[in-house]
Length: 520
Image (cartoon, rainbow, N blue to C red; front, side):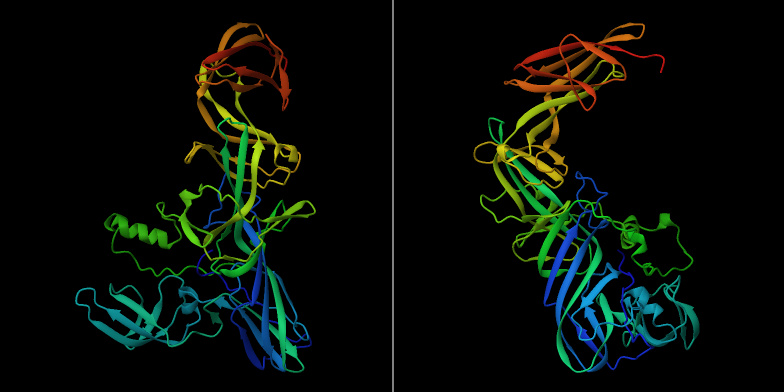
């Protein structure tokens, strides 16, 4: 979200009529905080969370100790998430509860500072680009931040940034109603002074999470050591230190997020009629301007916090520890909760990785596969590689597997070697698990049309293997007609399926006929 996001604020007043606060109590930070992160349901498992645009959300629960005076008070909760959904806020633990809700405060930004300074006196500092001489004078703000900023000085009215000089308005104080940190305010009443333990719970947008699997295949190719990181992503400007953290897998029904967040305050953009064309502006300066409007530098890297250290995103495939404390999985009806066993810091604008699960010696088999379409002619392509297993205790799994990316390594003695990347969807206990890990250049297929007689077409499918060991191969024949082959075919997903073991440095051939129904 942009820096000029509207500060979401709740004001609570007496139900019987308006009441002014007798004092303001500020809670600078929570004593303890819990963060439960929900995934973006529209993001596929092949995509990593994007810190600049995340569709997940989090349930934040904060505990604060607040000294509440007698009478009616405004209580300010500083440091809440900037993406707080105000309708979701629940405050408990106040002596006599809350009274009225309202939101009218804004986060301190260049835009809101100008808008709230309308009619106020500011100090204007101008610096000559040639000599460096500084000229200072008083001015009054006469327009808002929409377009050029109009100021009134002793010399008359003028638009800021239209003189060609470096100009900076200086404010003596922050106008009322602005806060430097995202703040939630409530109005409460107490018959006597009390130290209350108050719990604030709310939903905040701009969070996400996913699993990142690191799989190491045995030299024989029949066993797999599986380790998974739980990657938490916080795109909010507020971080949460030493938080009790959980992640929830599964779909949660929510209303449209666009209806939950008030309109953003527009970014400040002071403009004058241009004296130059875009071709006169150096490319570097133009790029900086575009980035300032929210464009992302393509060369920039997101950093990920990993057990107290920082590593760049391309290094996500670090091998797993031999022994590690992993997240504790619990059932929430149709949802799955993964509770991190120790407190972690979910920093602002960053990602955090904690251990999710670990399994050794999982029984797997490697299958090479291709889906064949009869519209193809003389087409040759590598077969795809798939790791196949079943999510059962007998195979070494038997636990819910959340969706995420997979990096496949082979144990090559002193160090593992990366041999493929893929993804895995959500899998319940007992389901078949297939992990696509890329193409196999050494196992290739070729489909050749042989003949055509009326509505009957004959094809020949050749698969070759240049490896020193045999491979299991599967071909799904995608056709709209009846298929007859020179050997027995099974079926999967409604399509004829040919399964064969291709010998080392050898080949296998399937000839089949397709009869089309021309009446359709």
